[in-house]
Length: 116
Image (cartoon, rainbow, N blue to C red; front, side, top):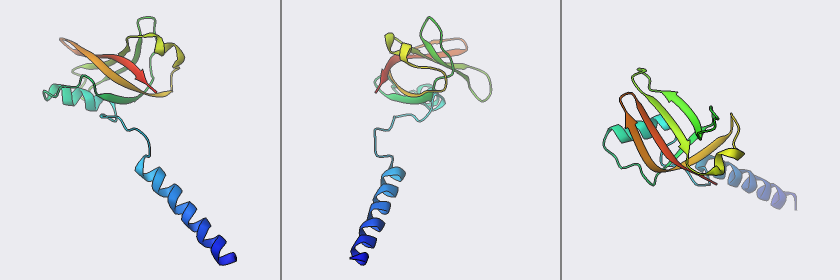
């Protein structure tokens, strides 16, 4: 009985470890906004893909992330196009599905909706 219980316990622990290491859930196409920025600059079509990020901005126009490229030549911003930004607070982790991209001289803006 003890041997069976030990085996079940060990298998349970191993199973939980495998699930946590494999990320057992949906993973975004880009693990961070800068990765989406790099892909976009390399000519990749990013519309319809997803970005994982941590909310660091919250304002009335829907901007939920603001960051700069490592060389500070451009800013990368994420905007929510629906009211799903209302439930997010600074520090929350979320995933954005990109619906459009706008660029200006020193800025790349990704617009989209929050994915649950």
